[in-house]
Length: 130
Image (cartoon, rainbow, N blue to C red; front, side):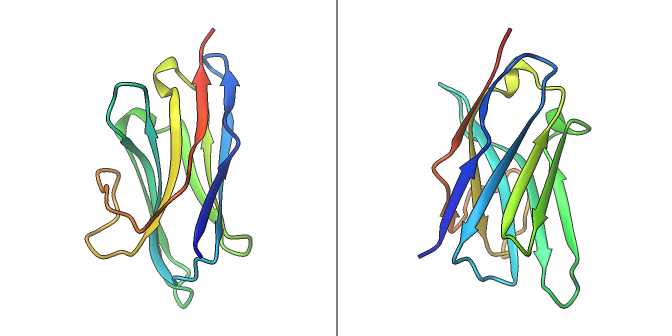
């Protein structure tokens, strides 16, 4: 059974930093799209960052970000530990929300507007306020 387990959320002041992690269990796809999404109360779920992996043979990957987080957030993956991370710097109040990790195939592309994924985590809450 595939599971995605997020952690690392919390409360920080504006300008602060947090690193979210998503541990993937029993997910053995060699080529995949993974991403971080967030949802604030009363708002639609928004894609934050994505990572495309093109197979162990190439060890190549690509990343994408929504405009509002470019230069502040970094998405990475530790393949040996099966952990997807999101380093978030210079946080703003508008970054607050529930952050979800998602995983799926590469069919259809891998980008922050994508909403169809095979697996989702339960989320971790991020609150940015003074």
